[in-house]
Length: 424
Image (cartoon, rainbow, N blue to C red; front, side, top):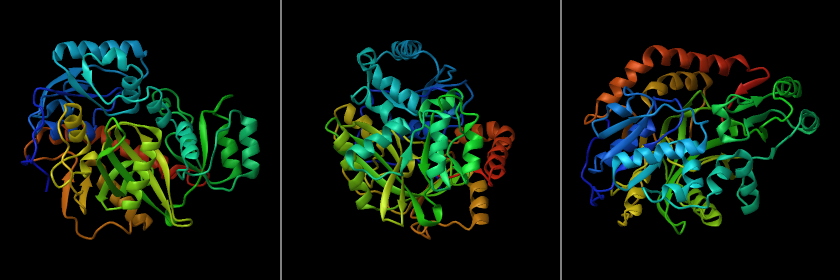
């Protein structure tokens, strides 16, 4: 059943609102709705930047006001900073910023001085979030600090790609080097599996004189497991809330956002994440994707999102703390209660899990760590105490959403011989 309002053994500061900060056109964002509900159920006044007045987030009973501000994420930083400050003046009191994408997280980090008088947010090395969101920057940090990651190359020309193709062991994976290119003209659509040398060279002809791609070792899903870590780290890079789980299904299959996941205890993985964060000195919310490679017994870090992940509501401690609540408590000077994570809990994104389930059954792929019977289920959209976001999602999703799912599926199927979508 969907999780509704519950009592918790702590109180949030209801005089400090929260603001969901998102740049770009993706109105069906369940993570933002989850954050609005999470703090709103504690009595925290919630605000959100939305594409229009009819998004699921804007319809939540826990949202005090939606600030309609259509953006692409490619605007000049000064324009976005001024827009945030203008919203801050309208709210009229110090407000916790909750970024839901890399553009917002990087903008806040790189303009801390300008935003700091009006907003509350974790203070971090201004250059670190951009580096972590970059595939190349993350790979370099992993090498520097001894964190396992897939072998990778970063070609700067077609000739370098051709040289790589002569030596590479196929299949390989191609990704966009920088996180923000999805707002512009990405070289590849997401994570792309390339099966042959000929397939790589054919694709590379369209990447221009300066290909912004990373060519990475392919980790076959038959020999691997997808794990996720969500956490909040304080100003000393100490974890105040840290959770581990497994991704059961995603959409597009093996390549997209989480559609179904479980909370699974993994002390080794938790220690790896905490150690890495301490080494790089990060503070704030993190969302990590790792793949356990059974061939060498290593957890390899694939993606580092320096902000709240869309599926963060999968994770909650026994006292009722999730990463968004932990951040709000910490930034307002309140103690973050300690407690074990709700092992066995399940998270389901209703509008994408059904097609994902059908696709995974066809492929025969299973996740060995998923419990047979979940201890509880958190639905991304449906909640008994806040039903309108689910209704709004359905209204906006049914026709264009079904067409989009079909297009994603066709993209995934069409290139199976040379280049296909594949798990990161």
